[in-house]
Length: 252
Image (tube, rainbow, N blue to C red; front, side, top):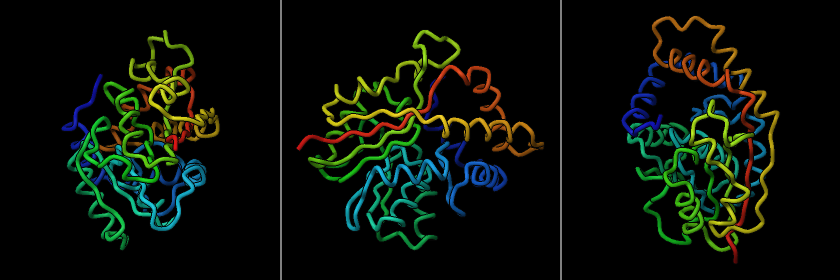
C-alpha cells in the first residue's frame, strides 16, 4: 500500500494530539529529550549518523523526507550546521517550522514542501544529504538518489538509513522494501565511495519498540492505535529484512 501526502498529514496531526506515542518512542529508542521522531532511528543510531555526516559549522544539510524535522534539527544543534528540510506533508512542514522556533534554531533551519524526487533546491547547493527511513517511498527510487546527487556539492556526503529484504522474492514484505538495493543503486546514481552496513543493534531497538507498543492499552488514542497497527503488520515478517546504514560521496 502506497501512502499519500494526505495520509501522512493525518498521521502527523494525530501525533501532535498524542504525547504518549512520542514519549514511548523517545523512551524505548533512547532519543534525546524533546526530539520529535519521524521514524525509527534510535539515539545510538543518530550518534552514528552524525559522525558519518561530519558536518562543520555553517555547512548545509538537506534533511530529505524530514517529517517534523526532529533529526535534522538535532544534528543542526550539535554541529552548528544549517538544515534545509523537505517533505511532501504540509502538516509536517508546519510542525517543523514551529519546532525550530521553539528550539531557537529558526535562523539556521528552513523547511519546505517537496518530493523525494524533486526537492526544488538548486544544483550543488548543499554539503550533505540525510534520508532517514524514507527512500523506499520514492517512485522511482533511482530518481530520488539522482536528486540527492544533483543537490550535493562535489565531495558532499549522502547518508541513508532504511531496510532491505533478505530475499527480494519474499512476498511477506511490501514491494517498496523488496526493491531496495543501495549497494547497486547508489553507484548507478553517480555516487562513489559507497558503503552499506548491516545494523542489527538498530534492528533490535525497533523490535523492542514494537513489542513495547503492543504491551500498552491504546485506549482511544489514535496515534497509539496507529503505532500498534504498524507493529502487528511488521512483526510477523520481521526476520525477512535487515536494517542498513548507507554512505556515499558525490564525486569531485
